[in-house]
Image 1 (cartoon, rainbow, N blue to C red):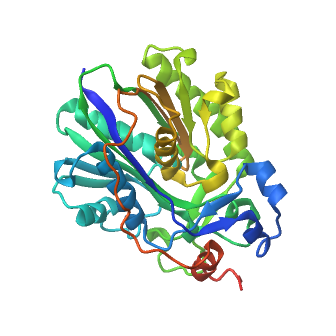
Image 2 (image 1 turned 120 degrees about the vertical axis):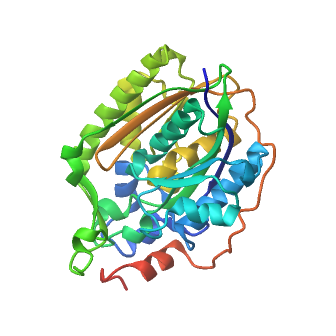
Length: 354
């Protein structure tokens, strides 16, 4: 059976760090409050565009795969924070990398990478694509409200990418499970910025979230989605070697693993270092897990996420023989001497931050 298998991986996390101690200087919060409720110690704030981060991660993924951009038939970027409404972030990635394949963005919020991977797999199975670049990239710092401690402490910027190609071997994406409940659109949203209020400056471009409702739905839906994907792959939960969950909140990650009865040592987390990077969180975590030797040849890897929409999705794959990079690449981006807090203050939109 023809399906997609991952042959390259890469991530870009901006150098500017925003720590909990930094946030204490602008928000009524403290490190203990943030850490106990989310598991986050710091996050990254980007000094470059979303497309530039996506391209940087892609360069590393292409190098890891030993593949040139001209060999890519499809570039799909999962993002809810595009640099422009038109054209897509994927088009800008292709402009910087080269190549002539199809390009598109996909918005399923934090579930975006799992959705995008499933789309690429479907096109590979159909025979219309042989090799694809699948990216999760977000610059959520642009929408943080520094007067709202319930959301401002959670989000960060970054990008992750994988190269997938067609295989008829035992490795690759075995099953995926995608869902959405449109009745829950308002419990996680970014108000403003769309055509419904393009001329209304009174509507702030900020993340709005009902945390308790998100927690309840996230744990239930991620558990159900993962279970269904595993069953579709004709596997048991005990067969899962590594679980990579969307890095939204450590309590959600732990509760989901407990619900699934997956032992903690099988769960990979890096939320303490990056916070919630939305669609970028799973590919960043996957790239790090591979580079750290967490994933071994033949491992069953489950990935699960939830996000605004409300969306949720899970994917189960069997890893191939190679878990090391064929090559590496410089991200090619300028450095910055600004701190994360300085960058965040510069882009705060009328929120009274000094």
